[in-house]
Image (tube, rainbow, N blue to C red; front, side, top):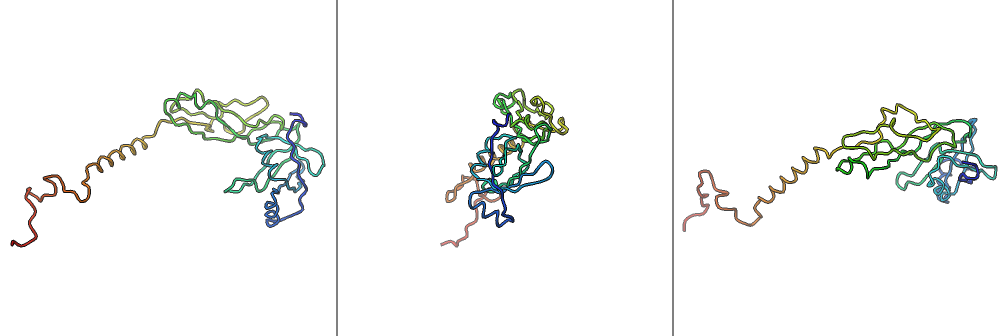
Length: 235
């Protein structure tokens, strides 16, 4: 992707330091962050929160940052801290990259063909196990996401990362044959047992005598079938 085609995020230098200053920035709708350089130099910045959300929502692994009119620089997201309740970004770390050098990055791993999978159509339960994958590629070759096609999976089958295709120029990192992407399992025996227990409880409830009503003849008699002794004196 050429420079003019990449998304641009304009940021301002940040002189404020400390958690109290960061809270003041957030109250003004700004997000503090740091751009880390190739040679370990770093620059603190602040950016409009709405613009940042719009850029991150595009999902591009690579975009450009322009700091105080100093020219566009290609970056990737190094780290982001989010509010645990609202989910909004509270702090952002960016990393400047060279477009001619391969780097490692983490990208989303998504499933496709879930509705077509025979195991799902037969009532199996599909579990998406691995949702991110580490890759190595030139910054311009980093995909926004990698798709794993599960359209051929049946019940009791497992897909591992070594069976997932990646674009040209992209290499996945790790022991791919040991990393589970997705599984399809039959309804568990535990669920079946729970259903049986629920049915048994319902049958038991139907056999109970409502409060205030007499029990059917023969019930509540003492041993030997005799009637219970009277507790009063004869008149």
